[in-house]
Amino acid sequence: MVKIKTVSAESIDQLKTKLKSGNLTSNNQDRVKLAWLNENKDISLIDEKIDEKRTSDDELLFFAEDDIFFYAGEKVESTAFLFPGQGSQYAGMGKNILNLSDQNIINKADSIFMEFSDYKKPLSYFIHENTDEKILSDTAIAQPAIGLVSALYLNILKKLNITPHVTCGHSFGEISAIYASEAINFETFIKVACMRGKFMSECGQSKDPGTMMAVIGDEKNIQSIITNENLDIIIANRNSPKQNVVSGGTDEIEKARKIFRSHRIKCIKLPVAAAFHSPLVQNAVKPFSLFLDSIEISSPKTDILSNTTGVCHIKDFEQIRESLKKQIISPVYFHNNIETMEKMDVMFFIETGPKKVLTELTKQCLNDRKRPHIIATDASSGKDQISDLAKTIAMAFILGIEPDIERWNRLGQR
Image (tube, rainbow, N blue to C red; front, side, top):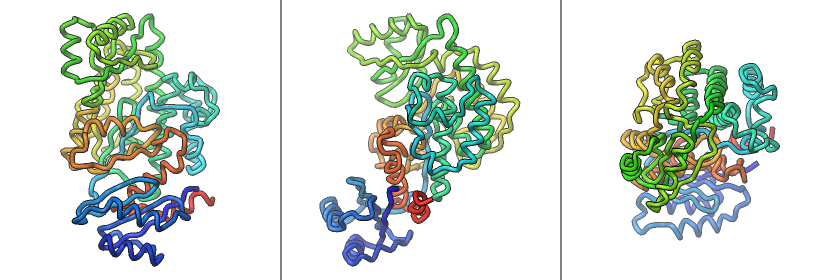
């Protein structure tokens, strides 16, 4: 288990004095906070790192290097949880955090998945290290699997007193964001994930379900080329100023790829089952809508960003239900979601789930404006899941979130 050590003080000099004396006490009211991983870390190295990074006037100071997290500034008041969508799945994405999670939650997810999907294996099987990557790419598996992993990370963070003020997801991730807002319970969340994945997977079985392609470049320039070349495709994901995703028929996407390349624009075909967030997946809308009509949705306890509008959902459960019905065939305005949260003065973004796709997109969207703090619970994409999670908790501490560090340090001793 990766343990976290912490100390805080009213000034940098006082904190350095406490470090040298071994007085590792903390008070959330202190302006200067330090956290590090590995309880046996050489204190002198931490002291040297502070001196190296220290500014002449001791104004706002932040660094996160070599497993050391340091911040001298005002408490961060608003935190957003970001939830990844399909494409962030990988074999073993839940292998280490399964041991830190509530087995009852995992059992519920397994039971629901076997009831609502066509697969007769438990959902937890698909997030273990032995999973076949090709099987995991099946939309009917990928979405509930990503959902379960995101929920496990979410529940660990909440147990440690790290909670969101606002939630946001990307495509499928919006379902996770709605769960995180407590508008739906866990059982309903897994059912929605299963059915959304199932109906979208079925769209991929048509004669030409279409496909998607990431295009590296400015949205206006991409749209100009689409219009001028009379391409029958749409910008389906407005991800960041540097990246957009187009959807369309298979042949039309290939035609677009050649045209974009002639303009020296980089394109990357995506391993998806269909042209999601376009009219080509219209057949998924009706059955998914009927299913959504059968579930219970409550008013959320936090703000939730809508991919379809780019702004916050109205806190009305029926409006949320109707928005989710349209979301499958509507473009994803993730770039607008991040800009909306910037206007809300969100300063701490935690990507909650597998990989760090949204972390990178968020950095591109904000481009260091206001110097927000952005971190992923799985930044190494499975290379060291426990350390990644510990770093997230350490970051929360230095920003004044008051995570339960003692509880985290006890988790691995169960």
